[in-house]
Length: 337
Ligand code: 13P
Ligand code: SF4
Image 1 (cartoon, rainbow, N blue to C red):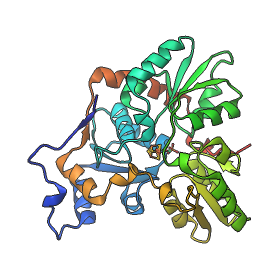
Image 2: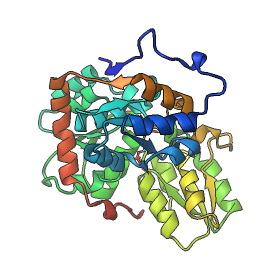
Image 3: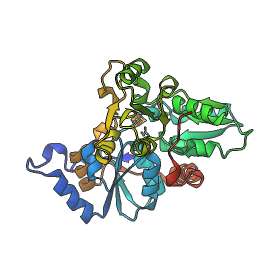
Image 4: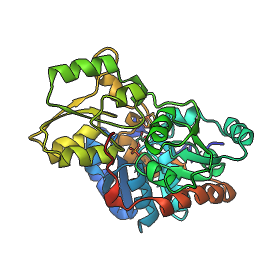
C-alpha cells in the first residue's frame, strides 16, 4: 500500500517553473508562510543540508519530527523517514520532495513476507530497523536505529529470542556486540554493502594515520578494519572529538559535508567501492531530492504522506517503544571492539 499522495494534474511542475525562479528565496518565503520546518538527513546534498532547520541521523530526525510545533514538515530524506514523521506527528502536513525516494532495505522486506517470517518464529520478539515501510513497522514489536539498537537489545531479558530485519550486516554486528543469538532477515543497504575491503586496505596503506569510522550497515569484513563503528551522528561525533587529523569515512559520502564544515583542518576520505572510486558511496534514493523539488513539494503540499489511521496506530506502538527505550541523545557514540 503506497502512503504517498501525489500532486494533482493542475499542480506546478519542474517543467513549468519560471527560468528566473530562485529556489532559496522561494523556499524561504514558503517556510515562513506555511510555518514549515525543513528536516534533512546527513545523506542529503550539501546545499539541502545547509538550507535545513535541522540535520540529523534517523533517531535525531524522529525525535525532531515528534517534537516540532511547525504546521508542515518538509522531510529531506527517504520515504520511510517521512512516514515516521507522519506516524509521530499525524496533525502535521508531511511532504517528501520525491515520492520515489525509497530504500533498498525497505524494498527487500515486503509486509507479506515479513508476516510469514514472523509466523515461523512465534516465540521471537521482532526488532525491526527503522529502514522499513509503515506496514512492516506495524507488524513489529520494537523499532531500532543504528544509534539505539544495541542499547535496546541489552534491555531485553537474556532468554528472549530475537528476530532482526531487514539489514543483515547491522544484525550481525549487533549479535557480535550483544553476544545474543539473532535470527536475521537477508537484506542489505546497496550503498554500505558495496564498500570494498581490498580497496580500503589500499587506502589505509596510503594514509597510515587515518582512522576508519564505519556505519554498522557495512559488511562484517569491512567493520573488522574499523577503528570506530557508529550511526551517522556517531561517526560525526567521533571524527570531531578525535585528536586524529585524517579519517576514512565508511558511510554515504554526503556526511563528509558536515565534517568539512565543522573541522576544515581535518582530511576526510570516502571509503572506496570495488573500482577504487567513491561515486558508489552516493545513495541514489537520497539524491533524488533537489531544491526545485523541495520548493514544489512545499508549494503543492505534495508528494504528501497520508496513511490509514489504523495502520498509523499499529506502526506508532513499536516506534513509541523505541523512543522510550532509547539512550539520551548525548550517549550515542559507540567504540569498535
Ligand atoms: P542513521 O542515520 O540512523 O545512521 O541511518 C543511516 C541510513 O542508512 C539511513 O538511511
Ligand atoms: Fe537505504 Fe542505504 Fe540509501 Fe540509507 S543509504 S536510504 S539504507 S539505500
